[in-house]
Image (tube, rainbow over all chains, first blue to last red; front, side):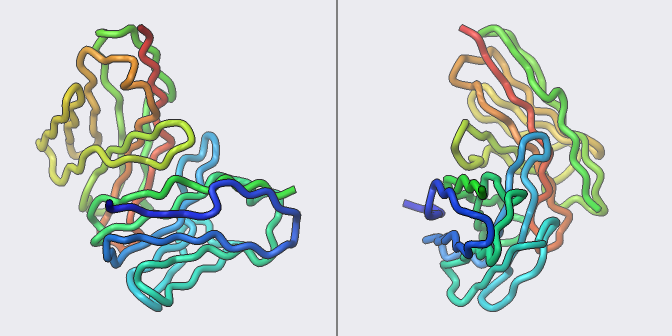
Length: 112
Length: 110
């Protein structure tokens, strides 16, 4: 089954404690992205990757890091989380930049 | 910068009451307009892609249309299971993928 898998689904952490949210896709897609979704603001892109070792900033990259060492994986790293990073996070992948994106189930992050 | 505005923010319909959702966009060269459905607590699920003005796509009770400035998602004789948030997104050809609107939360009452 074609899918994008994120882990964990739910996470509560404290300010400043480094965390990683994993994302894996089994469709051999080249393009992968991370979004955050906040009430009234919609989905906003954090980072994207066009291929292995190629990443670039989206609309709201501050406070986040990503890496793309393998085609299937695209982890999101918060090195020093702050309460304003409390949000619902989605990973997505697509075959090309202009084709439909497939989304993971989401990770609800709370930073206290 | 790509911009997407969806209206209304929320819509309540009676079962069988047809209506339309609007997505207005501003892009420098549209490569694709996408409609997604999102259920509470889940990731967006792809519905349609439209590429050029005049194009239409249909799936069950849903029909998406596209002009040079906006897209409509028409819902004919909706059922309660159509209740969800409907998201519109555009791609202007960059590798940044999608720019999303804030969505329309649709509730269909039995």
